[in-house]
Each structure stands twice: as C-alpha cells, then as structure tokens.
Image (cartoon, rainbow, N blue to C red; front, side, top):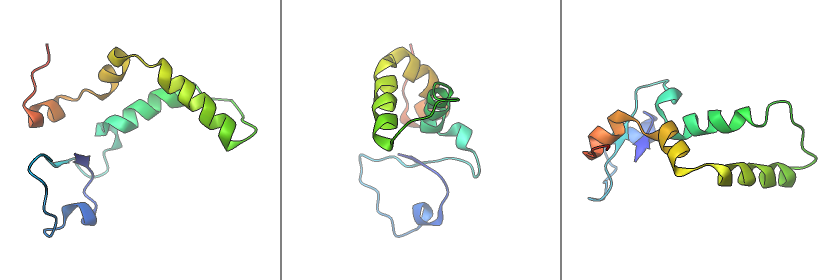
Amino acid sequence: MQMDQASAHMSDWILWPENVLPIVQPSHSPELNPSECLWQDLRKRFKGKCFESIGSLETVLFEQINTLSKKVVASLTRFSYILDALDIQVT
C-alpha cells in the first residue's frame, strides 16, 4: 500500500497485516503517486468541457477510464521504487 506521510499513516499503533507492505512516499510529492499520474492523464481529456450534472461527468469519466489499455495504465503507474519494494522484475 502506497501512502503519504500523514500522521495517521505513520502511527506506531498501526499493525499491518502480513500481506500488506506499506510504502511511504516522500513529503509533498504527488508526482510519485501512481493514481495522481493516472488522474493527470485523464484530466487532459476534460479540458474546456462543461457538464450539465455530476451524473453526466461521471458517465464520461467512466467511459474514458474504460478506454485505457493495460499498457497505458502500466506506463503511467509503473514506478521502479514500487516494483523494487515488491521485488518485482519488469520484463
């Protein structure tokens, strides 16, 4: 699980399950968060557009998300520091 350094995330009382590996990103570094990078890519598709309702925005957002290929998502979210922490080799 990747997380920022919020005090609630860094508390000593947190007992992490064996199957969860906490990965702490440096302070003030949203560019290191895979979901932020994915969102930046999606935001470009909405520039200058107006929606009549939250529902219509939601519909278009889901349509755009569904157009993303696994390759595109991997290119936006595959960070070496995460793969290293998980000990995953990229081929």
